[in-house]
Image 1: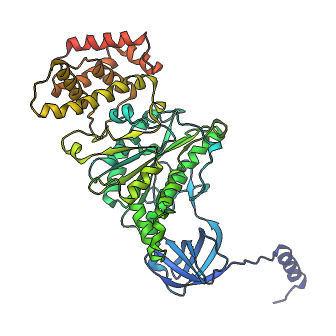
Image 2: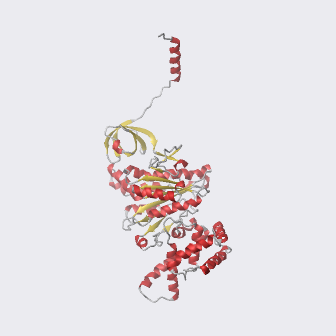
Image 3: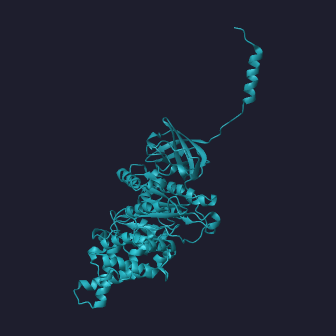
Length: 516
């Protein structure tokens, strides 16, 4: 075979012209010790706190993050399968912070805390990523909370209203209906989807059973709520680092939509539910102790306090210059035997803008949602209500408080005068009126009609057992015979001199036909 020199020369010239001198310089260390989701690494002298690391294992790369900076070693947490990491494995520092995929492609998906899909709907082709742990917007970038986030639950929307951009804690013992309140709120946002008021919901399950999370996803699909929901799953089967990072990941996914307003896009409102933060604190404690952080850190300056405060501080209502988007947080905390003064509940109560207390006694006596109206509070209050609701909610709270007070007297078997008896009867009917079935959120206008009818005394002569039946019939009548009044009230969202007589006439007309 004859070799042509000119051909060889041209090939060499071509290769030289394409050649680029690329040298990758990366700092590497080695794993000295590996344990339950944590590793100690020697040799990463320039590593920064919170930096993303890459563990080079025999089965491929596993990600981790710098947690502790010690004198000669680095303490890191491992995201992913920590059983793959062995002593002596090489670890590279990346110079990046932990990021998760965000955007519209995430809607309707079930993902792990790193944004990897857990459903069978194929890979997620995200184009945008957001840092998981960032500093919350400052006060100059925010504005006061004024828009309501309707939960669809009469007891909450009337007396403990939640505003867009608020942090409202749901707290109570296990099995008192905490998750149900959160799920009702998600289902209730369906009416706004596709409008400028649309809300994207992120449900973060921390430390739940896999079967419970599967049940939640099925329920949201059944009610058509998965179209605007992202489920971030860090169940109890996941290692502690994943449970620790999950709420921050969910928050980052919500923040993407919150900042949409700047670009003039909708949806620009997000709702994050962290179910629940007690499990996140336990997971974080596990990591802390394994990395030999001193237990004293859990007291002031409050390591566990800081864990939750930097998460919940990211819930905000942005100023109009920033697009006016919002991120509402509904953290869930499980108490033991109603002990709200324990370390974690106290911490979270001090960070949030109000709390919804759920009581087992109320739950078991059939009052559901089992909200203790006396000690539940919203620090935003009437600012986060439509005018009509604000007007009627004041008398509702008084009716309930008076009834509760008189209940004690009534139990003594003392003779009650007519006025007292009337007050007590009214209170009992209002308690009955505030009861609501699971996963049946009410439109705010329906809620106003029902509470108006109750507080104006139209149900005083209706038997307590027939109150719910009366309410159902009233809704039906308002949607058919008196549709014009309902539409007007829905449009105005206020009870003015014009509409109040029309509404009263409509309720009277229905009452004349009602049979208990």
